Image (tube, rainbow, N blue to C red; front, side, top):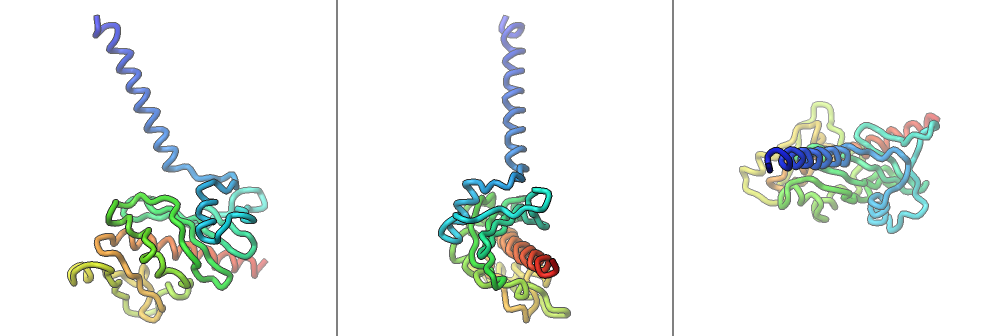
Length: 217
Protein backbone atom coordinates (compact mmCIF):
# COMPACT_ATOMS: atom_id res chain seq x y z
CA UNK A 1 0.00 0.00 0.00
CA UNK A 2 2.76 2.43 0.97
CA UNK A 3 4.78 1.71 -2.15
CA UNK A 4 1.80 2.11 -4.45
CA UNK A 5 0.11 5.23 -3.06
CA UNK A 6 2.55 7.21 -0.94
CA UNK A 7 6.05 6.55 -2.18
CA UNK A 8 5.67 7.92 -5.77
CA UNK A 9 4.26 11.35 -4.76
CA UNK A 10 6.75 11.56 -1.89
CA UNK A 11 9.67 10.94 -4.25
CA UNK A 12 8.24 13.45 -6.73
CA UNK A 13 7.90 16.06 -3.98
CA UNK A 14 11.52 15.55 -2.89
CA UNK A 15 12.72 15.88 -6.47
CA UNK A 16 10.80 19.15 -6.87
CA UNK A 17 12.23 20.54 -3.63
CA UNK A 18 15.81 19.65 -4.59
CA UNK A 19 15.36 21.05 -8.11
CA UNK A 20 13.94 24.32 -6.80
CA UNK A 21 16.82 24.63 -4.33
CA UNK A 22 19.38 24.13 -7.08
CA UNK A 23 17.65 26.72 -9.30
CA UNK A 24 17.64 29.28 -6.49
CA UNK A 25 21.32 28.63 -5.74
CA UNK A 26 22.25 28.96 -9.41
CA UNK A 27 20.26 32.19 -9.72
CA UNK A 28 21.91 33.75 -6.68
CA UNK A 29 25.36 32.71 -7.88
CA UNK A 30 24.98 34.15 -11.37
CA UNK A 31 22.63 37.10 -10.87
CA UNK A 32 24.04 40.52 -11.69
CA UNK A 33 21.99 43.60 -10.93
CA UNK A 34 21.45 45.50 -14.16
CA UNK A 35 18.67 47.78 -12.99
CA UNK A 36 20.91 50.61 -11.86
CA UNK A 37 19.54 50.42 -8.33
CA UNK A 38 22.09 50.68 -5.55
CA UNK A 39 21.26 47.73 -3.31
CA UNK A 40 21.46 47.73 0.48
CA UNK A 41 24.65 45.67 0.14
CA UNK A 42 26.25 48.34 -2.03
CA UNK A 43 25.00 51.13 0.23
CA UNK A 44 26.66 49.41 3.17
CA UNK A 45 29.90 49.17 1.18
CA UNK A 46 29.76 52.83 0.19
CA UNK A 47 29.15 53.83 3.80
CA UNK A 48 32.18 51.82 4.87
CA UNK A 49 34.33 53.49 2.21
CA UNK A 50 33.06 57.07 2.36
CA UNK A 51 31.00 57.39 5.52
CA UNK A 52 27.71 57.68 3.63
CA UNK A 53 25.95 56.42 0.52
CA UNK A 54 24.07 59.68 0.01
CA UNK A 55 24.47 61.30 -3.38
CA UNK A 56 25.94 58.23 -5.08
CA UNK A 57 24.49 57.00 -8.35
CA UNK A 58 25.25 53.96 -10.49
CA UNK A 59 26.69 55.13 -13.80
CA UNK A 60 24.67 54.27 -16.90
CA UNK A 61 25.19 54.30 -20.63
CA UNK A 62 23.10 56.42 -23.00
CA UNK A 63 20.71 53.48 -23.52
CA UNK A 64 20.08 53.18 -19.79
CA UNK A 65 22.18 50.07 -19.24
CA UNK A 66 24.65 49.90 -16.36
CA UNK A 67 28.22 50.92 -17.19
CA UNK A 68 30.54 47.92 -16.87
CA UNK A 69 34.14 47.10 -17.69
CA UNK A 70 35.98 43.80 -17.88
CA UNK A 71 35.61 42.26 -14.43
CA UNK A 72 33.61 45.25 -13.15
CA UNK A 73 29.90 44.74 -12.43
CA UNK A 74 29.05 48.40 -11.85
CA UNK A 75 30.55 51.84 -11.23
CA UNK A 76 29.09 54.10 -8.54
CA UNK A 77 30.00 57.77 -8.13
CA UNK A 78 28.87 60.97 -6.46
CA UNK A 79 30.92 63.13 -8.82
CA UNK A 80 33.87 63.25 -6.47
CA UNK A 81 34.36 59.73 -5.16
CA UNK A 82 34.09 56.60 -7.31
CA UNK A 83 33.64 52.96 -6.34
CA UNK A 84 33.98 49.91 -8.57
CA UNK A 85 32.02 46.73 -7.86
CA UNK A 86 34.34 43.87 -8.77
CA UNK A 87 33.88 40.10 -8.74
CA UNK A 88 37.11 38.10 -8.97
CA UNK A 89 38.29 34.51 -8.67
CA UNK A 90 40.18 33.60 -5.52
CA UNK A 91 40.53 30.01 -4.40
CA UNK A 92 36.84 29.76 -5.35
CA UNK A 93 35.42 30.87 -8.68
CA UNK A 94 33.89 34.35 -8.18
CA UNK A 95 34.81 33.95 -4.52
CA UNK A 96 35.74 37.62 -4.06
CA UNK A 97 33.05 40.29 -4.37
CA UNK A 98 34.27 43.73 -3.34
CA UNK A 99 33.66 47.44 -3.69
CA UNK A 100 36.91 49.29 -4.38
CA UNK A 101 37.14 53.03 -3.90
CA UNK A 102 39.34 55.09 -6.22
CA UNK A 103 40.02 58.75 -5.43
CA UNK A 104 40.45 61.59 -7.92
CA UNK A 105 44.20 61.03 -8.07
CA UNK A 106 43.63 57.49 -9.34
CA UNK A 107 44.70 55.85 -6.07
CA UNK A 108 42.92 53.15 -4.11
CA UNK A 109 41.18 54.81 -1.16
CA UNK A 110 39.73 51.67 0.40
CA UNK A 111 38.17 48.24 -0.08
CA UNK A 112 34.84 47.02 1.26
CA UNK A 113 34.05 43.31 1.26
CA UNK A 114 30.57 42.64 -0.13
CA UNK A 115 30.81 38.87 0.06
CA UNK A 116 33.60 36.33 0.37
CA UNK A 117 33.47 32.70 -0.62
CA UNK A 118 37.04 31.83 0.33
CA UNK A 119 38.20 29.10 2.73
CA UNK A 120 37.41 30.04 6.36
CA UNK A 121 40.55 30.65 8.39
CA UNK A 122 42.78 30.83 5.30
CA UNK A 123 41.51 32.67 2.25
CA UNK A 124 38.95 34.48 4.37
CA UNK A 125 41.84 36.36 5.99
CA UNK A 126 42.08 38.61 2.94
CA UNK A 127 39.28 40.62 4.51
CA UNK A 128 41.47 41.51 7.49
CA UNK A 129 42.35 45.19 7.77
CA UNK A 130 46.07 44.42 8.03
CA UNK A 131 45.94 42.81 4.59
CA UNK A 132 43.63 45.31 2.89
CA UNK A 133 45.50 48.38 4.13
CA UNK A 134 48.48 47.59 1.90
CA UNK A 135 46.40 48.54 -1.14
CA UNK A 136 45.65 52.07 0.06
CA UNK A 137 47.34 54.62 -2.18
CA UNK A 138 48.19 52.06 -4.88
CA UNK A 139 47.88 53.37 -8.44
CA UNK A 140 47.67 51.63 -11.79
CA UNK A 141 51.26 52.58 -12.58
CA UNK A 142 52.45 50.83 -9.42
CA UNK A 143 51.00 47.50 -10.59
CA UNK A 144 52.35 47.52 -14.14
CA UNK A 145 55.36 45.35 -14.84
CA UNK A 146 58.41 47.00 -16.37
CA UNK A 147 59.54 45.64 -19.68
CA UNK A 148 62.28 43.14 -18.94
CA UNK A 149 61.95 43.69 -15.20
CA UNK A 150 62.53 40.88 -12.75
CA UNK A 151 59.53 39.32 -11.01
CA UNK A 152 58.85 40.35 -7.44
CA UNK A 153 58.70 37.78 -4.66
CA UNK A 154 55.63 38.31 -2.54
CA UNK A 155 56.44 38.47 1.15
CA UNK A 156 54.49 36.03 3.32
CA UNK A 157 52.78 37.61 6.28
CA UNK A 158 53.13 34.38 8.20
CA UNK A 159 55.00 31.21 7.24
CA UNK A 160 58.24 29.33 6.80
CA UNK A 161 60.94 30.00 4.22
CA UNK A 162 59.47 27.15 2.16
CA UNK A 163 56.11 28.87 2.13
CA UNK A 164 57.70 32.20 1.22
CA UNK A 165 59.43 30.58 -1.73
CA UNK A 166 56.09 29.12 -2.85
CA UNK A 167 54.60 32.62 -3.00
CA UNK A 168 56.64 33.92 -5.91
CA UNK A 169 54.47 35.73 -8.40
CA UNK A 170 55.26 36.38 -12.04
CA UNK A 171 55.50 39.90 -13.52
CA UNK A 172 51.94 39.93 -14.76
CA UNK A 173 50.60 39.34 -11.25
CA UNK A 174 53.04 41.25 -9.08
CA UNK A 175 54.41 44.04 -11.25
CA UNK A 176 58.00 44.78 -12.13
CA UNK A 177 60.81 45.29 -9.66
CA UNK A 178 60.54 49.05 -10.11
CA UNK A 179 56.75 49.21 -9.99
CA UNK A 180 56.62 50.43 -6.40
CA UNK A 181 54.32 47.71 -5.06
CA UNK A 182 54.94 44.19 -3.78
CA UNK A 183 52.00 42.13 -2.59
CA UNK A 184 52.26 41.07 1.04
CA UNK A 185 50.46 37.76 0.63
CA UNK A 186 48.90 35.66 3.36
CA UNK A 187 50.65 32.37 3.94
CA UNK A 188 48.49 29.44 2.90
CA UNK A 189 46.13 31.69 0.94
CA UNK A 190 48.02 32.25 -2.30
CA UNK A 191 45.01 32.14 -4.60
CA UNK A 192 42.90 34.37 -2.38
CA UNK A 193 45.73 36.90 -2.08
CA UNK A 194 46.21 36.91 -5.83
CA UNK A 195 42.45 37.22 -6.30
CA UNK A 196 42.25 40.34 -4.16
CA UNK A 197 45.21 41.88 -5.96
CA UNK A 198 43.56 41.02 -9.27
CA UNK A 199 40.38 42.77 -8.12
CA UNK A 200 42.38 45.90 -7.26
CA UNK A 201 44.10 45.89 -10.64
CA UNK A 202 40.74 45.42 -12.36
CA UNK A 203 39.32 48.49 -10.61
CA UNK A 204 42.40 50.59 -11.38
CA UNK A 205 42.34 49.57 -15.04
CA UNK A 206 38.64 50.42 -15.26
CA UNK A 207 39.24 53.80 -13.65
CA UNK A 208 41.97 54.53 -16.19
CA UNK A 209 39.70 53.48 -19.06
CA UNK A 210 36.86 55.61 -17.70
CA UNK A 211 39.04 58.70 -17.33
CA UNK A 212 40.52 58.15 -20.77
CA UNK A 213 37.04 58.09 -22.29
CA UNK A 214 36.11 61.28 -20.42
CA UNK A 215 39.21 63.08 -21.63
CA UNK A 216 38.59 62.01 -25.22
CA UNK A 217 34.92 62.86 -24.96
